[in-house]
Image 1 (cartoon, one colour):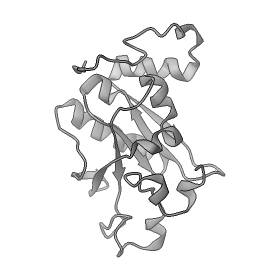
Image 2 (cartoon, rainbow, N blue to C red):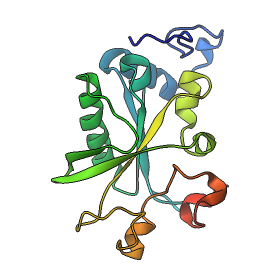
Image 3 (cartoon, helix red, strand yellow):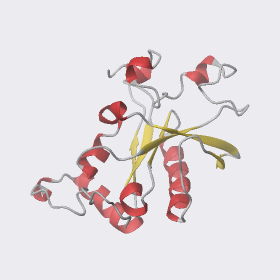
Length: 182
């Protein structure tokens, strides 16, 4: 378990008196974090918007940021987040601005620090696990077939809208499917 100078506040390390009220998903998350070091939440695409996936427990177990991906098939994102999670578990430092090769079919991904104001919209289960922010989250951005990221002007419009820009404050994010819940 990672050393936390502020003492761990997650549900594994502190009994908040409501463990008996945990639902099936909360119990599965806690079990996976204990067993594997982290859990991946998968939110499939639906009528509200595209799918996304994110980790819970990397910060608790390995002192690494949690990771989130958006806009691909959830099982593919689950696999990619586990690849990056394994790097963190092996001691790699994951940080804002980094690029990691060979995560998406031979392409690199870029890591971007998520603004805290997005947490309640996208990371509710992580907030439930940690009990409150801040816990660090990095967005794992994937490129198009020409290795252009969705914030680059050269990227096709469809790709620019395929993922949110969670490093921006919500008030500065371009309007679209990712801001519908605001």
